[in-house]
Length: 403
Image (tube, rainbow, N blue to C red; front, side, top):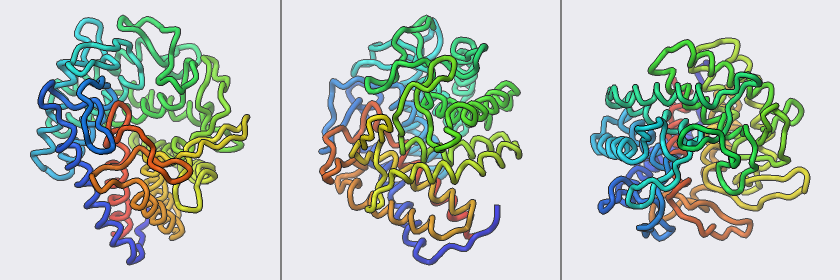
């Protein structure tokens, strides 16, 4: 990668992102620890009030584990390691299915199993968190758990006939009729979202365990995105597919488009495969350009667009804005074109003006009229993963450019 010189105005951006990354961690340490029932609260509202009865999900806990493990890896701050350890122990004690393997989808506020289904999206995020914890602590238990999850995903979810991965199973790893990740999703057997986070998890696993099958599956997933999920004409992602890779949705997710534009390239880099790196370098900017069809004049990214209905979902969720920051930094690295840094700053200004709460963390999002969406600030889906990762990724990428 070529050495780049950044404009002086980016020095303020770097300082602000450094402060914000610390503030995000501080918020979660102050407001999310459940001292009564163990682990972390299942939900905290916009006024920072915890919901003592909210269920606790594997996605939330895996993302907390990943975030604080990564924070410790970056800073050697013992308070971050202790919080990662809290998440790790809670997941082993409450989420791990010691009889049938894998992790449960959710537990109730007291830690008893609530939903025992084995959603592959959740299994993947558990690998992502556990492998980062292994990097932080050298925990052999975390590494073995990650390897075991990989084996179970491959045994039960991988489609030997058509490729890719099926979505969901019951506790005993039997296929379910209802495959949906959430109520808003289509009930289809293969989804872009799950595949994106399987490859993310496998790339992190490969960083600590150079098993040839992990390598092969990352290659397979990169091919799967190239052949099936990335529309060759529009460069938008196809979101929902049947088992034979027929598209079953007309939705465009601008946030996933913009996230995949940089994340798939990073996964190709994780296996140090030059041909796949070159391929996804070529795909990165067209995917980013497609995502920018959802970019508003204020610097914020709209949520979704239904092509068939010609209907824009007039919401700006926080996580796509975070992913946009990384995508713009990535585009600048690839091209050296300052326009991407200008756009990065515009989106950061949008975040500061509309999403950052003076009480800490980021709101879920805003509506089309700029009003705050009345959804939890932290919870089953709202985690420190997107915004903390974005702060660090942008800082790292710009610092590389300064060398």
